[in-house]
Length: 341
Length: 266
Image (cartoon, rainbow over all chains, first blue to last red; front, side, top):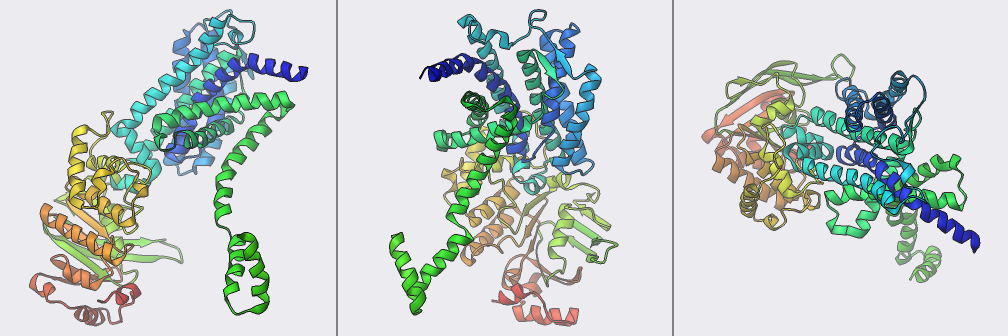
C-alpha cells in the first residue's frame, strides 16, 4: 500500500513534465501526421531532422542569437531536411522510405559538422530559453509549472490553428487531394511533385521546431536525440486517431485530428511513465514504443480478419454442408451448428 | 478543336515486351464533335485518350488543342484544357474529401492555387444548384465524403467535375463500363445532356457498339494502334452493329477480338 502511494505520488509529481514533453513531441507528431496521414508518405527523415532542429537552436542560442530567431532557423533547417528527401524522391525517383533513410543518415554527419561533438548542452541559467524542465518538476511554484505546460500548449494550439487555415486554402486542398488520389490530382492540374515537396518541407520544419523546443526543455541537444523519433510520432498519430474515432465519432474533423495527434503524444508519455513505475527499465523504452506502434497497427488488421478469414470461411463451409445429404459430415457439423447458436 | 498528328507510342521500348500501342494516329476534331471510339483489345483506344491527356510523353507526333501545341506540356499543365472521366469510379474523385471539396478542386483546374480559402460560400450555393440537376440527392450531402458514394454517383460527380470549368476537350474513357446497366444508361444520358448543353468537344471510348452508334456525331474504329474507320453524320446514324462487325473484318482482315464488345452487341 505504501509502495503504491509513493508510486502514485511520483506519478503525480512527474505528470506536468510528462504532459509538457508530450506536447513538445506533439509538435513532431503533427509533422508526422502531415506526411503519414495527409500525403500518404512514410517519411523517415524525422529521426534526423529532430536532432538537426535541436542542435541548430542550441548552437545559435549559445552564440548569442535571440531565442525566437534561433527557433525560426531551426524550423527552416528542418524544412531543408524535408526538401532534400522530397527532391530525392520526386526529382531522382528514389522510393520515399529510402529517400528518408538517406537524408536521416546524412543528417547525422551534418549534426556533427554543426556542433563538432555529439552533445550540445545549453543552460537555462545563462540563456532566456522559452521552456525548461527545470520549472516543471515537483517543488517549483505552481505558477512556474503552469507557465511551462502552458508554453508548450500555446505552441501546439498556434500550430494547429495555422495548419487548419493552411489546409483549408486552395493550396492546402491540393495537398490533401495529392495524398488521397494522385491520378485525379494531376487530372485537375495539380503539380503533385510540388505539393509533395512543400508538405515534406513543412512537416520536417515542424519536427525541427519540435527539436528546438525539446533541446531547450531537456537542456541539451544530442546526436542521438532523434533515434526512433518517427516511431514515437507514429505512436502519437495512431493513438490519437483511435481515440478520436471513439470519442468524437462523426465530429472527428481536421482540427480534431491534429489536436488528438498531440493528445496521443501526451498519452504516450503518460503511459510510458506508468509502465516505468511498474518496472520497465529506461533501457527498454524503445522496445516499448515499437511494441505500442506494432500493437496499434495490428489491431485494425486483426479486427478485419476476425470478421473474414479463410479459417472462418472453412468452418462455415463445413456448417453449410449440413444441408447436403452427406450423413457422416452432417452429423458432425450439425452438432457444431447447435453449439454455435 | 483537337488535332492529333501522326502520334506514335511504344511501351517497354527496346525490351522483349515492346508493345507498339499507337502507330500513327491522325485525327482532327472540330468544335462540338462528339466522337465515340471502338476497337478490339489493345487497339489503342484508351492509349489515344492518354496521349491527349499527357499521361506520358508521346514518341512521335503532335497534340494540338485549339491551335496550341501541347505535346511538350506535362499532364498537370495540360489539365486546364481537358476534362476527364475514367473507367474506374475511384480514379476521378478524392475519396477522403467532401463532395463540395472535390467540386472546388475541379473548379480550379488549370488555375494557380494560392492561399485564399479553398471554397467560398458563393461556390457552395452554385454547387448546390448543380448537384440538384443531377437528381441523385447529392445536393443535401455536400459535406459527405465522396468515398461513401456509389460507383454511379461517383461517376456522375466526376462528370460534373470534368465539365465544371468548361474543357476544350472532354475525355470519357469507358466511363460507364464499371456500372450496372441501369446506372450506366443514366450516366450516359447525363453525358449526352452536358455535352449538348455546353457544346463540348468530346471523345468517348466504349465497348458497347450500340452506345457507340447511338451517341455522338462521329464514330472511329481502331485496330493495332491505328484508326481504321472514321464515319460521321447521316452515314453514322444509319449504322448497325452488324455493319460495324462486317466493317471491322473488312478493314482489319480479322474478326473482332474484343470479348466484352461482342457480349455487349445489343
